[in-house]
Image: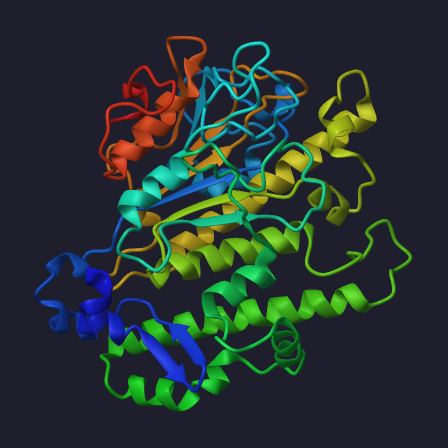
Length: 432
C-alpha cells in the first residue's frame, strides 16, 4: 500500500455504496486530516500529451513569423479566446522518425524505430510513461493511456496508443469514453451490459451513492459544497452525453450530408467526452499524466465529409481536398479550445484551476503530407511556470530534436533527468 492510501484524506476521497466506488476531488474541509503530508494540500502538476494524427494545411494553419500571437491564422482561429495562453513552436523535428507513414509510432519516444538496415522494429520508453513513474507513483494510475475506438487508426502507425514501455513494446490504450468512464467511475461488479442498461435508464452512479453524497454535503464547507455540486454536475453531463450518443447511434440515418455514427460514440463527440473525462480524472487525482491518441477518420466522418484522411492530408493540387482539410484543421483546434475551457473551469481545492496546474502538449508527428520535418507543437496550460505562452516561437536551429521539447516539459513538470531519448538539451526559447 502506498503512502497516499495510508492517509485519512485518501480514504475519504471516495463515496461508496455496495460495490460502487466514486472518486472525489480533493476537498479543503479534509485538509486538516492530512497534516502529516502538507504536500497533499497543493494541487500536483499534470502533464497531458495529445497526438492528433495527420498534419495540417501549410498555408492556412502555421504562423510565419515569430513573436506574440496577436493575430491567428485561419486554422488556429478557433483558439482566439485563448491566444494569450497558447504557444506554437516551429523548427521541431523528430529525428527518430524516418518514415512518413510511421505516424505517431515514435511521437513520444523519439526513437529510430527502424534502426539500421536488417534490424527488427524496436521502440523505447515514451515520455508519458516516464513522467508517470514520478508524477503518478502515489496515485491510482501512474498514467492514463488513451486511444480511440477506430479499428484502423490512420495517421498513427504502429502501436495501440502513444505509449511504449521500457522494453519498447506497445501499451494498450483505453478505447473511447465509455470504456474510460467505466475505468474511472465504474462499478466494481458491474458488467458492460449492466452499465449500458443503467445508462439507458438514465440512472447515474450518483443515484447509487446518493445517501453518502448527501451525508458528505453536511460535513463540508460552503466552498467544498459548491465544488462538489460542480463535480457531480460534470459527471451527470458526461453520463447524459454517453446516453445521447449511444441512442443516436441506434437511430435511422437522416437524409443529409452528415450521417449518424454507425456504432457508439465517435468523432467529435468521442473527443469532447474524452476531454471532459480527462479533466475529471485529474481533478480526482486518479493520475497526473495522460496521453491521448485521438481519432482522425471518425472526426472527418462526423463532420459530414466523405474523405479518407490519408488522401485528405495529400491535399495539394485539389481545391476540394484543400478546403476540406482546412475545415478539419479548424474542427480540431475548435475542440482544443473547448478542452482549454474545460481545464479552466475545473476548480482545485486552493481556488486555482486545472489549467493553472497543467502542461498540455497538442500536436502531431507530421507537418502535412509526407513532411516529417518542422512538426507542429502547441503548448498551453500554466503548470509549467516558466513556459512562455501567447507566442509563435521560431527556434534558431532547424530540425531541433522533438525530444528536446519532451525533456523541457518533463523538467518543467518536476520529472528529474538531463536526457530523454535523442535530446541534445532543453529548449530555452520556450521558457520565460
